Amino acid sequence: MELWLLNHLSTAWLGLLVVGGSVLLALAGSVLVSRWSPALARGGNNDMVGVVLGIFGAIYGLILAFVIVNLWTELQDTQKVVSAEATAVSQIARDAAAFPPGPQDAVTASVGGYVHVVVERQWPLMKAGRGEFTATGTEVDAMYRALLGYEPQSQSEQAFYAKALDSLNEVAGRRRDRINASGSELPVLLQVLIVGGAVAIVLLSLLYGVPARRARLLFVGSVAALIGFSLLLVLVLDRPFAGELSISPEPFRQSALARFW
Image 1 (cartoon, one colour):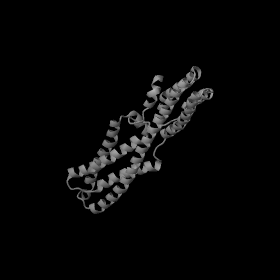
Image 2: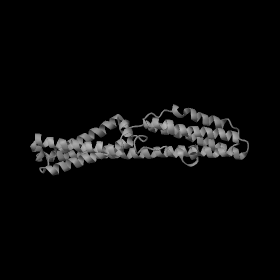
Image 3: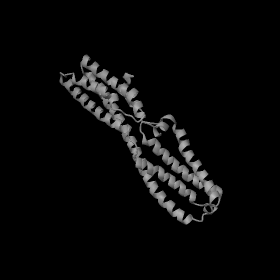
């Protein structure tokens, strides 16, 4: 469901669904509570509810802040992994220019095949949460074969060959990191804690009485909106390759790799 929402709805619609839905449900709940129990609306239990709401809010806020910061950091790290992989691939193409025409053409062709498969085949799989290693396994092997099938002659060729081989090894490592990141998500228990904590905070806000109806609705709506925005952030950041704010494959179309497009 999470991936479907991210891949089929814009961020604006997701915000409307999550934040707007949270506010509407909270407001409806506040109206119902005030009708069923007028004593709660008058604030008869505010002392107890206020203490519990403060404790829950502090604990939940710390947990939520930790989760959001961690997800943002992971997103940034994954972006760096993608950029590093694309840079290493482009370096292979550059180093191959020092080889004779035959080996150079073989390496260049294998690099071109790799970047096309990454962008056109593997990226949609990662967007769906299925970053399969087999999608680019053949192309990685082709780059290794193209390099290992060439024996450099001059010192210049040997230097560029060694750099190209190091870059290819980095590509293999970064590729694994990228694919692993595409399938990562918050543990189920942490997801339950985030959603369950949000529900608990909103329910507690319904029990906090404010005699003035408009002030009560404003209080409950503000709490629900804040919780909704927090849940929206968790939803958007949890999947680095899905949604409007996902990591783009553009690094594989830029610099020395632009000629393959």
